[in-house]
Image 1 (cartoon, one colour):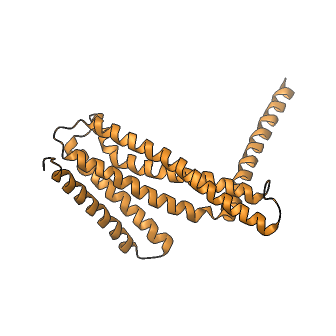
Image 2 (image 1 turned 180 degrees about the horizontal axis):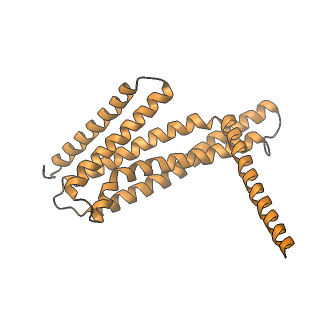
Image 3 (image 1 turned 90 degrees about the vertical axis):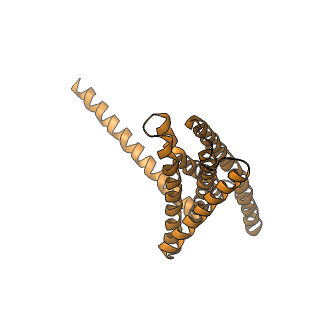
Length: 223
């Protein structure tokens, strides 16, 4: 019996070791794909651009809702979740089709230049990897930013805070998201942190003001 137990332990240890090696191999392969396809720079652009869109879209929802007296926080949550889900699906599907078409065009150009098929090559695998990764980034970045913006209303629905606290908290979170995106852009471009951060904040404040003015012009009470 002890021999059997030792054998089981060794088998389990070997299995765990193989799993770690397999995962390590995958990481190395993905890193190689990322380098070949230059997916890093593309994903960064998708992330910032779409997180920016998601935050400002939900800011518009929050500003419009803040002008409606006694609005139920559940309506804002449902609108935010629906918008986040739609942005996620739209981003993933749209980016996948667009990126897939662009990558396929590059493969065809490379095949004509090399006078051989690129199927079953590392470049083809790298192209597929880049398409999937950029699609996921494109879809989830706006949804994540949007959920951060409406997160205070989940707290209202749970009874932890009031609507009077949730509205300014939501707007503050939007500005924080925009500031972080601006600082990230400044970091990757090696530019002034204050300059990029301030630009993002100005865009957010102008958007908030315009949303409020449009809502009031359409008859919403200026509360």
